[in-house]
Amino acid sequence: MLRTVVCVSGGGTNLQAILDAVDNGTITNTEIVAVISNNPGAKALERAANHNIPGICMSPKDYADRETFNEAFTQKMCELAPDLIVLAGFLVKIPEQMTAKFSGKIVNIHPSLIPAFCGVGYYGLKVHEEALKRGVKVTGATVHFVNEGMDEGPIIAQKAVMVEDNDTPEILQRRVMEQAEWILLPKAIDDIANNRLILKDGHVYQA
Ligand code: GRF
Image (cartoon, rainbow, N blue to C red):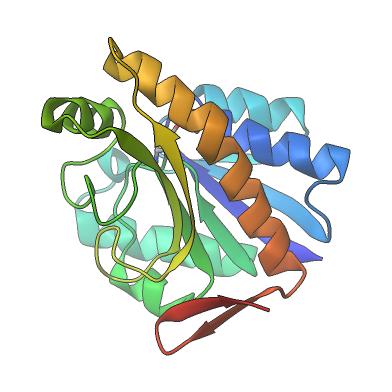
């Protein structure tokens, strides 16, 4: 069983897609052992509780400085000893000591076709606002491994989603979630759990 920890900050619809996929057998060989949120009010924590999954709240705000938080966060992760860490809308930058300790074991979902609309400052609705501002006709979502950069790790999977006339950021965000994120992320977890992905020389191959 792939011991998996999911990190969240908000609504947790991607977490829900993962939990549903484990329940209905779309994801196999995987156990969600904990959900970590930096936000005590995250609806994602309710979703975890509804599934009897331990929810842990750890926010940089509760620590003297970022370095102290980074150490505590990495320490907690080491105690949980996951085979995979899934960032599902997690708004805290992963400390370098964690990316080093869990190299090749952290994945993130990003709501655009990387390398478009990604990096520092591109999170949540902002991504979709920028896509609409630029007038792109196609956007999408990307699942990638996490390294010390921001949205820079090896790409696992991408799915395109059409932009439509009169889209608002909210409408586009919902379409990207429905047509791409909630499909891509569970599939990537299942592929990892069943050894169907190979990470070699910074590139991901399907076994
Ligand atoms: C998603 O759009 C995800 O791609 C991004 O943050 C959002 C989180 O949404 N990283 P939710 O909390 O899973 O509903």
